[in-house]
Image (tube, rainbow, N blue to C red):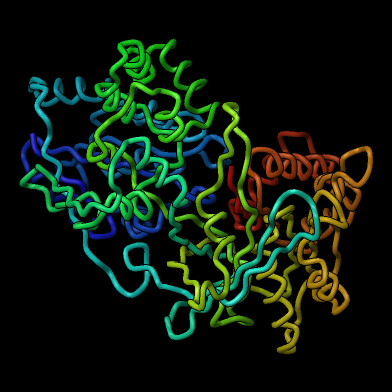
Length: 548
């Protein structure tokens, strides 16, 4: 059996039906869901093709789908479910049931459980026996200009300031210069940045594994048929690999623990690592408690398991790649065509083991000073398009709900509505619900927001200071206070609703508040109110940009 890994963006998916020309062929679609049930960037053309080609005949295609999603979000695994259903509608034959991966739980474990049932079903369908031999996976990768994930633009940092006046957190506003890059963005898009790992963590890994991090190395793929010769750009040094290319801060997945177990000299440690990598209830519980709940990264595991000292070559092979981090752009290209603004809170927290864990990207961005030892600081970045868009008609009212750094895209929206007013355009009501802990500490962008209200760009500014009084007040409480106004805007004036921020609690509480407003002022039952809000989402009048 031979396999090939293919990026749908790199292929003409209109040729999909030709897979039937290959005897005993099977297409496995791994489909992630992004935003409001949307396809990922590289699957957008494939999704459009599926929607537009009702006459396509895929009767000779054998397929199965594994979906990657997060139950925290409203449209859980929507893309995987759609592709699975749509391929069947076009005549393709489903060889094995749709698999659902939940990143809010353990995505890897979900995949392994699905895979364990998938292979026997495939072997039975094609009448073959599993030999246990390693598969030959071929990877194809094409560099695409101008600036994207494979070719990020090196933007210069022109401003980095702290937004909050007090408190123990650090909220920051950065501006990067994109002059001459031909990069275009719209309000609501995301900027992706490629961070680097903390040098202190990299040095500790070198010390604990007793290796010289500055040795020049080249990791070569032993699979001669593979087009991917190296796991990351080579030749390089261990220091460069651990700093720029490898994820050393996330808790390792179970497959990594399984591979590393062989290097533990203590049999008890070996047993525990293999147990954590197993699918037994006891093993899952141990992995959940000792690794995930304790937030142990690879360094913490090595520190707490002295008998485990793997060769650094194998560790570099096993660790996942360091991924780009996405931030909602806090500016409008109408006002700032050559600049992109980022609003973020620096992540830093204490773990159950007494360690201090720091977010890779936010701490890296915090240290991106405008000039560092006489050199200009730069950030590798590119733009990811979003469906989070202002209404096409500027006369439509907008209701924006974004506590904390969830205000980021709304700073762009407010700038754009202000720009439209300056052009003499008629602009509908612009209502903002913002929330923070204390008025005197973390009322970020206070001057900008109050100026926008003074200039009637923001027609109603509602700010919930959750901890300035004994009873906590959040944005959803302020919404209920203004329920008559909100209902008029939604039901009579065709308002568009935007929610940005925490998916786990805030977004759900806000949605519940809308249900209650629809029930009370629209005379609806809970079921009718739920359907009413869902229809707003379907029509693109209720958009969310949320994260967990």
